[in-house]
Length: 289
Image (cartoon, rainbow, N blue to C red; front, side, top):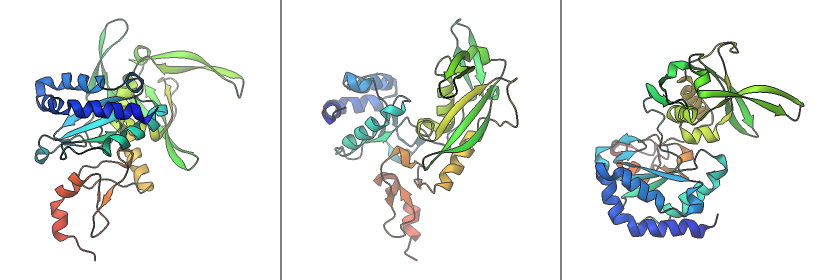
């Protein structure tokens, strides 16, 4: 994917920014603004990424002081093959920002690990019947593995017998290395991804999760935990890797390129100059001791 196509988008975005910005700020026109924003992507780009935005928020947290501020998120459409494109897109767009801090680009779908979990999802299946999918319908086991030097969280999801045949289908999979085959559960649609997005976010799903296996109640062995346990495991992995976290909004390294350190103590980390300016309490007592 050439840089010229990304620059073509950004030129079109800059040209449309004035009226697009006004539409984003007006609640009734935000869905139209989102459609226009994505329509600016050349066809080759729109197949690989999708854009979303938030208003007056820092990393999905409402900040009244950030009135009329826009965050634009670049999603690789839940495809690991598109991450390199997202990184390039992020670099080119953020390197050209000069709109007085009215907007900023970030990588992956918008997500804050402290956000509330869904209580339920209204699910319409192929038979056009509506079901309420509850998080209680799922339980998980996890195992920490490694991809070269990177830790990965492998997940086994036990799906309740009440819904398993509604959302999963069994397929016969052949394993060439062992020359064997077995029936494996697969999702019928994006429901599982929506649930995992809400719990751990797209950036964790693509970068920190290894394999995901689905099993029925009859196949479940050992101790299983609620879905919230996945968040706990991701946070423990972050601490073990000593990952930087923005002091103000909690943004993680995968969502940006570089953190800004406090110029005095070098300890507090910020994902942007906006968050650094908002940390007025720290600047009042920070010193080099």
